[in-house]
Every structure is written in C-alpha cells, then in structure tokens.
Length: 218
Ligand SMILES: [Zn+2]
Image (cartoon, rainbow, N blue to C red; front, side):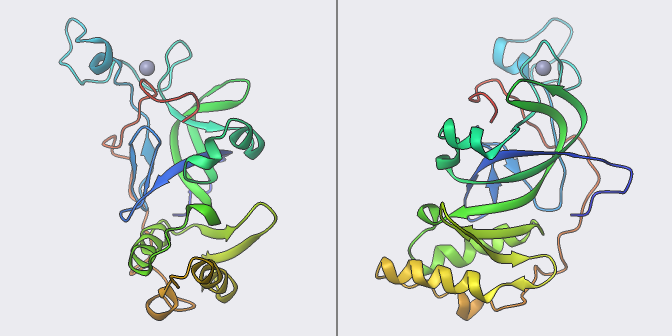
C-alpha cells in the first residue's frame, strides 16, 4: 500500500509468523494485505472486566506510556538478531505512525504496515505446493520481498518489477539442496503482480493488537 504524503512514518524492524494466508504477529494478530494495522488496548479482556465497560471494549486509545499496548517494533535488525526474534519467522521493515511511545530498543505505535520483507532461507518450506500459496500471500501486501541468507539479500518480488528471476533461481537452488525442487516458477512467473494490486483501506479500528501476552517488542 502507498502511505499518503502527509504521513511521515518511523521505519522499525520486526518479525512475523508466515502462513498460507499471510502475516501474523508472534502473538497471533493477523496483518491483512492492504490494510493498516490499528493498535487497540484489550487489557480488560486480559485482567478482567472493568466497571462500566463490557469485556473486550477498548480501555483507552493505544498506545499509552503506562500500558503495554501498541504495535511493537524494534529499532534495528541487530536487536532482532541478538534477541533471536529474527529466527522466529520472516523479518522486515515496518512503517509506524500515529501515536508513538518510544523505548530504548523500539517503539509501540498506533498504526503500522509492512514496508519490506526478508525471507531467511532456513524458513522457506521445502515442498512445492506450500511455497506457491505462501508467496502469493506475501505478494498481496504489495511490498518488496527479498530472499537470502546471512550474507546477501536477493530481490524476490518488487513493486516495480514483480517477481525477480534471481530470487526465483535462489528458491530453486534451495529446493535442489533439499531434494524437493520448488515449482513456484511454473505458476508464479516473472513480472506477476497480485490481482488488482494491494489496495489500501481506511483504518476502521477492526484490526487489533495488544501486547499483553506477547513477548517484548512483538
Ligand atoms: Zn493499553
């Protein structure tokens, strides 16, 4: 999605879980393609009903300095690696805006959307069918995707050029190494784009995230 000109996002780093549908926070929150993730505080659902509010209602606008709510992001990839979070899934950059609470190693923010995604080779599934579905799920976000290892990042899909042959070749190399060659190049071809593109939708408050129950920063 393309952010409006009047938004000057902070760029943070974070890790996502990755399945056939797309991205989720490590605490399970779904990130929908083309849709801004809006933080909500659900502390009431965690600590019990607060008088005067139905359980599940927002306690307050998120994030708040004295709470744990908000969309979490780290300030650096180094932090993701030193804390081992980078090994929990795929990692990448994330645009952050709205209300921001800054911490020493990261931020909690009101709004977020992925900016770029990096697929470590060791997180790629090694059977052909899942990789096709899962790549489609990632491409739907409309952000640049890279694949690689600790020494290099190869474009796999970019907003300007679609699927990249070097990235696809790298996927095939990985498949060969595991004796189960991915066939993604037969279905997803260079230059492919998501059907209709990823269209941003207005934040409607229906996306939620609370840090309660999540590990720090994610
Ligand atoms: Zn809160």
